[in-house]
Every structure is written in structure tokens, then in C-alpha cells.
Length: 323
Image (cartoon, rainbow, N blue to C red):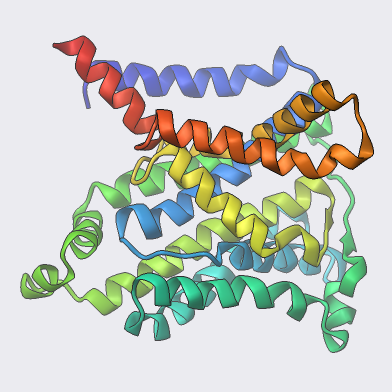
């Protein structure tokens, strides 16, 4: 690994560790949200950016992970730190099983199938015969975990708790995409027929990638439930799946570090859009519908200026400076 890249990684980790000590608790809470959103975007990026499978349904895996953790917490009274791995494994199995029938689908047809998954999940969570477990439309309230470290408050502790899992998932994705499995994933993305000719089992790799992608979203969903302290069907709608796709594109396809930028985009830009609308319209309630218009303008401008995402934009600048 080149020295500059190694130094950049170490500096980024050091900043992430020290940041909660110098910012307010609400900002720490927002950064924790960025972390679990970035994990979900990373899972989607493994599937779409590295393996070429298009999905509009990853909000469903986040919902499954969140409800798995919430049910373990509220009904089985299991400690929150033991819920993350089971939530991820549950979503791995769900993703793998969904990936099997999806093997026959590509492009728009796969997108339509995953759209159906995202659209049906909130309705399933509202189903009256499952209300005993899911809470129905009322959702599930959770208690914020207390910090086991005396000099950290709950927000800071949950940040470091999420950062721990985030670093593990990023390290796992980094090694996965740079090994034999990663080369097979990319080969299938670029030319599935040629990959099959070289002896790569397309079906297995596609299904496993779907499973791993689901695992990442499941961990993100479990963390979202613990951090926000509340889950409901409205928390994981099709709009959420679209935002994950937007975050992946804005950050940059097939780029692992860029998922942090994607997570920041879908958390902060809607708030920024709301601030812009309030500034121009003085907080008029009728202007709230324009918030998503402003968000769309931000999105169009960003894609126009950086068509290959932030990662591609940065790479282009570095290449120009290196000449």
C-alpha cells in the first residue's frame, strides 16, 4: 500500500476517533447516523458497483435488521450489543435466498423485483397478525443504551459502538474486493459470459454477493434502531431505498471510501434544502413541499458537476495535479 494512502487512512481513523471530543452531542448523534447509513450504502455498492446487480430494495434489508434487533431487545431482553451480529446474519440469509430467484433477472427486471420487495416490506410490517412482534403502525420504542465508559455519554458511546462495526465492515469490504472473490465479482459485472468461460460460477457469486450486501444493510438497520430508539414501517419505505441508491451514485460507484460521502449527502443535504427553503420563504408551512424540489436541484447540480461521483471527481483532480 503506498505511503500516502496508508497515511490518509490512519489520519481519517484518527479524526473519526477524536471528533466526538470536540463537537456537540447532537452533531455526534448525526455522525452516528452517517456511519450506519454509510454501511448500508457500502452494502449496496458491493452489489451494484462491484457486481453489477441493480437493486431498489435495500431498505427492506435495513428494516429486517432493525426489527430483528428490536424484537431481540424488547421481547427476548437480549443486550443490544448481542443483537448486531444476528441481525446481520439474518439479512445475509434473506439476501442470499432473494438472490437465488433473482439470478434469472437482469437490469430493469431485477430493479422491478427489488422495487416490489421495498414496496411490500412496510405493508408486511403493518400486517395485523404480526403486530405482536412489529408493533404495527405504532412501531417499537427502544431505550437508549447507557454508556459503560464513565467519561463518555450515551451519544458518544453509540458513536464509537457504530464506528467499531463500521471499521470492521469497511475492512471486510476492502479485503473482499481486492481478493479472488472481488476479482470474480468485477468480472461478472464487466462480462458475465466471459466470466463463466473462465470458470467462475456466476450463480454462486451473485447470490453470495446479494447475501453479503444484505448483511451490511442488516447491521446498518440494527444500529439505526438502537441509535434512533424507535422504528416503524415508515422508517424504511421505498423512498429510503432510493436515497441509498442516490448516496451510492453521489459518492461514486465501486468506491469504498466514498460511501461516507454518500451517507453525509442523504443526511445533511435534505436538512440543507429545508434551510434554503425556509430562508427564501420565511418558514411558510405551504413551502414545505419545495424542500424536495431544492433537494432535486442539489442532486442535479452535483451529478452535472461530478458525473462519476465524488470519488471520480477527486481521482480526476489528483491525476491532473500529478501531470
